[in-house]
Length: 246
Image (cartoon, rainbow, N blue to C red; front, side, top):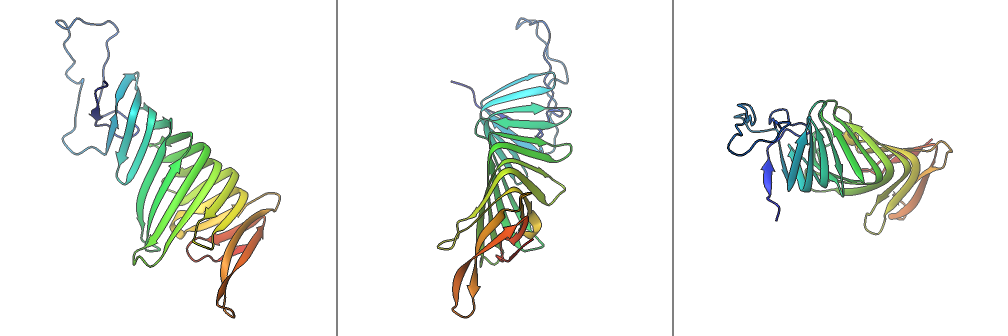
């Protein structure tokens, strides 16, 4: 039975918790660890990582089993992760999932984002995130007064984003779906830009066949009617359901 232990590491790096391995094995009687073998800061670590097993060599750590990395409001889970010290990055494989919970001041919205794919790569140094192969993203947004809730599902071949940017870029075979009761919306294109702070979707296609099927209220009948936005570029607000095509 594997020993389950807690690794207090900085996410994407192990620089503050140093593991030294000798070239030649020591007998238990002769082994004396270096004074800096385990250096633990007094303040609370930025991140906590749980795993079943850890192996480390030359600044690279491999975590396997029930891997769970927590950093602020971000949680990354998977069954295998490779961690680099310099530069600081993490590559998660075998059912990886990235979860983020955040509050958007500009629109007074609480947002929860889940990203799953075959590969999730995060570089801490430049704030870069990449997910590839069978990417599935769900975005739930709830207004602070709890009056409005929306869910957007996006699938694609590839996803990139940066921490200091409000934009997520989906590429490849991109599809968007909003399972909103009796009036679901859907769309398709080659690229989708999601502007996080504004809940805005920009769906595009070089061949001009990008589209979003949505619903709008007919003031005369007071009934929702289906509306299709189609063109090289479709701009659509997931909260207000307003959109235009170009």
